[in-house]
Amino acid sequence: MFRQRPDADLIVQGWVIGVMVEIPGERAPVRHYFAVGKADRAQAEWTAVDLAMNAGPVASSPVGGHEPVEALREIVAYRMRDLGLKPGEARALGDKNPRRWLSL
Image 1 (cartoon, rainbow, N blue to C red):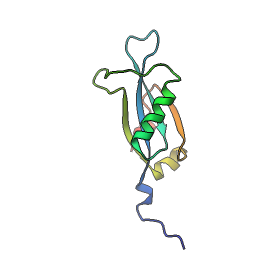
Image 2: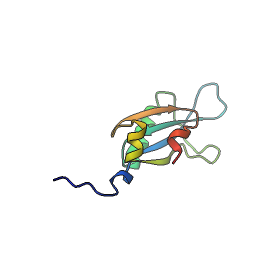
Image 3: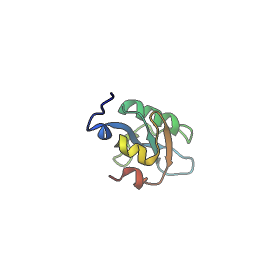
Image 4: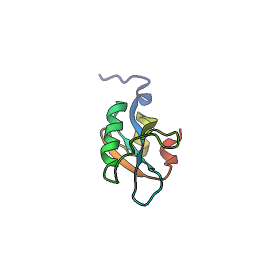
């Protein structure tokens, strides 16, 4: 019989990543947000950078105290199910602050 860990729903399975993208016509790079269903933070950041490059070049240095690529919040297993993010999936959330994804 399969026995699940009691804290299995609290294991980190994804990340919300912010990536600064240089948009033509904008004075400063704009932060775009991505939800990535990968437990490893570095893999999630690189996946978000790959997606962000579709919108434009990624900023090469910090802007206004924010790193060009920044992991903003981890997503635990039960929250991934609630938000409909599958393991390994990456989703662009746009350039507005994704409050639903960042809230507890």
